[in-house]
Amino acid sequence: MSCRRILPLFDAFADGELAPDQVISVEQHIIDCPRCAEQVRLDHAVRTSTRRAVLADVGVSSAFKTRIADALAAERAREESQAAPPPMTPLSWRSIAPLAIAATVALYFAAARSKSDGPTVAGANHSQASLAAGAGSVTASVEQLIDQLVTHHMRAEQPSVTEPALLQRFEPEVGVPVRAPSLYGARWEGASVVPVSAAKDQRAASLRYNLGGRRVTLYVYNSARVPLRATLEPRVVYDTPVYVGSRRGYSIAAVERRGVGYAVATDLNDRESAELVVASLQ
Image (cartoon, rainbow, N blue to C red; front, top):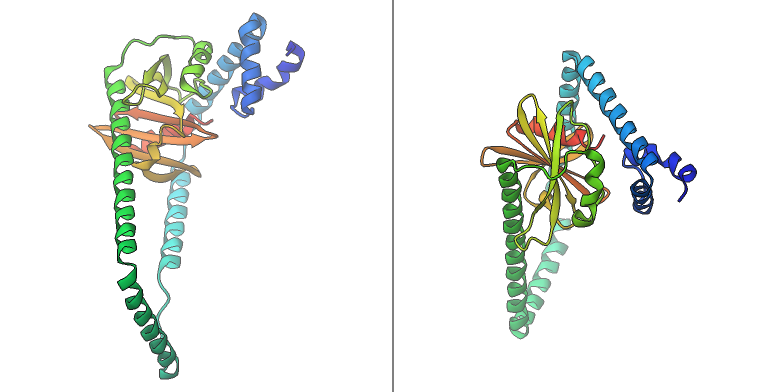
């Protein structure tokens, strides 16, 4: 693809809004074209500087926080009122009699069927037990995965790259597009690829940031193969579904978009971690 055709795609590429085939085309082009690669790096630097300047100058007012809290409280009250069961009214004898007759007939046929279908019922119970065991196995594997993410964050190993433009090298290993978003003015330090499964056949990009002297690790991964939502608590932050939890004194917050998962590990509280991971989508 020529420079003239690829140039109009740069803005959407930086915002993560291109289709997967277009992302591959842009990335292949900037690998082969140093001039366009320099343009992408310049655009990234301008966007990062602009966001930092805006975030440094614009704060959230207490009045705005109060309005948000009031709106959330009103929405919670509305959901609770809708979930409350309607008041029950007593049935008349004319309504009860047909129901009683139907229940008696149903019990008769159920008793007759249980005598002939005993092994089938036992098989159904066995299937339900197998499903429950499978669900428990998935939960245990996801817990191990989250423990791995926390361990990688605690180790803070030396990053393999320190230039954001080189993150595209990780994509064949991770299986999804990888970029370095701005996290509320956090300073980028570098990135590596880390295993996130017992067999080490699934990997995630580990992006390291420094936020006011506190370490922040942002993981980018294939959300279909790394299902963090299975054991984390769902929340909504700025109209975005977020999954949060705490392990070994560190908080984990994850979001998903178009098959790409983003998860932060920090020593901040759950709310702050959730806001950071939502910022990774911007």
